Each structure stands twice: as structure tokens, then as C-alpha cells.
Image (cartoon, rainbow, N blue to C red; front, side):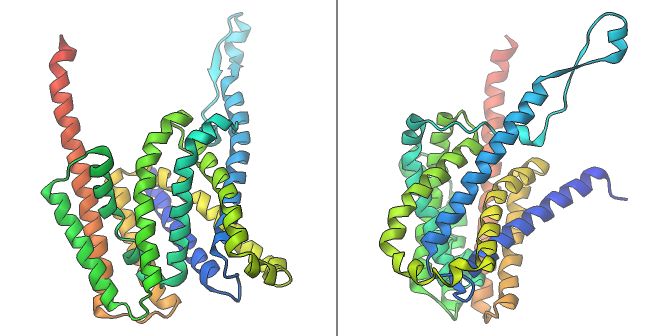
Length: 354
């Protein structure tokens, strides 16, 4: 019989899979289906940033109220009769993790370089999704860990082990296999995927540097990133997509179907951050990576059925080679971190005992 903990973990993992796959599929529809959406990926991305900014602001308001209720104390009736007062803290609320949104120009200027990287990351990601098949999407964006290693060495001075380099070779081999095996291969889509990988890697590095600026609160950083990105997208939209948007003024832009899809995709874009944190907390970083790899496999295989993509041996082999290399890489990194922590604790133990 399944325990409550097992049911909870299974529910969180299922929720992560549902939100993540739904977000990719919805964005694919918005980026490539001109019957529902418009050929304006910058505008679509801008709207999703606006939705995330609004949700962060509302969540911050709810979180502020939840924190105020939590800070209040309740008088115990039993002890009130005896003349003494006992204060019982209110149970922590889920919403209390969201900080109050207070916009600081100084903070925004410090976060600005990260926001530029963030804009490039989501723009190239959505362009990749627009031009490549969903079944090839994970392969096109598989260079993220390759650039992680390159930038970690170039920017942070972190060397790589032979095991790490071996994992990267597996990923690169999978990328080449998948590219050769992809029937509907798109050069510009693949280049967009590689550029997306570049900025995903830079985003993770600069995020670590910027977190202290926002008191190590990733929700506050999410708010700043998306609010600044919303402003950065406006001149790009006016220059590149004004004609497309004007042509859709009396068509898609007055369609409730279009705006429902847009809003839902924006909601899933915000929700992926929550379910990712929930899955890591409910399982472990390694299990999270295993779950993400399995999800990516299902997502790619599902695309063959939903979009009718033609599968080839090299194409499918490339998908699983990339995912396998990524999974091994995650395992190697986690094991290396555990060894470092173990070594550090061993070195500090005698000092602590004195």
C-alpha cells in the first residue's frame, strides 16, 4: 500500500511532467501555427513576460498578507483562563515564500545585464521552437551543458574532469546523429537552439552572481528579470514585428481563442519555476535530473504522434544519446559535489572539535 509520502512524490513528479510538456507544446502552437497565433515570436514572448510579471506581483501581495498572518500569534484558551498567555505561531503558508514586490531602480540597473541575457535566452529558445520539430527540440538545445563547462572554465576558472569531457562527447555525438537523422532539418532553427544554449548557460552563471542583489530570493529575481525584459522587448517588437501585428489587429488579436492560449502559456511559464522547486525538494537534484530526462524522452516521442513527425533510426538514436549523455553528466556533477562536501567536512571536523 502506497504511503502518503510516496503519493505526494508521485503527484509532484506528475505535475512537473504535465506543466513542462504542456508549456513546450503550447509554445510550439503559438510559435508555428499561424491559424491560431501570429508570426511574431517577440510579441508572444513579451506577453508571456508580462503575465509572469503580473503573477509575481500578485503572488507578492498574497505572500505579504500570508507573512503578516503568520507573524501574528494566537492566545491559547487554556492558558488564558489561568492568567498566563501562550502564543502559538500560525503554520507557514505556501504563499509566504513569495516576497513583497518593491521596485528599486538601483536594483534594476544591477540586474539589467542579466535581463539582457534573459531576453536573448527566451527569444532564441522560442525561435528554435518555431523553426524545428518538437521531436528535435531537445537535440537542438542539447549544447547547454557543453557551454556550461566552457563558460564555467572561462568565467569562473572551474576545471573539468575527464568524466565530464566524456559526457560532453556523448552529447555532441547525439547532436550530430540527431541532426543527420532529422528529415525536416532547419539550419536557422538549429542555430537558434545553439544560441539558446549559449544564453541558458550564461543565464545560470549570471543568476548566481545576481541572487545576492535580491537577497538570494529567486522569485524577486524572476520579477525583475521579466519586468525589465518586458521593456526591452518593446523596441524590438516595434522594429521587427510591427507590420505582422498590425495585419493581425482585426484577426487573431481580437480572438478570445488566441488570447486564451497566450495567457495559458504565460501561466505555465511561471508555473514551471514552482514545480521545478517542488520536485527538487520532494526528491533530490539527481532524481530531478532523471525525471527531467525521462520527461524529455516522453515529450519527444509524443511529438512524433501529435505533430506527425517522421521518425528515423538516427533521429531517435540521437534523442536518446543526447538525453543519456545529459543524465550521466548530471550524475557525475552531483557525485563530484558530494566528494567536495565530504572532503570539506573532513577537513573542518578537527577544527570544530577543538
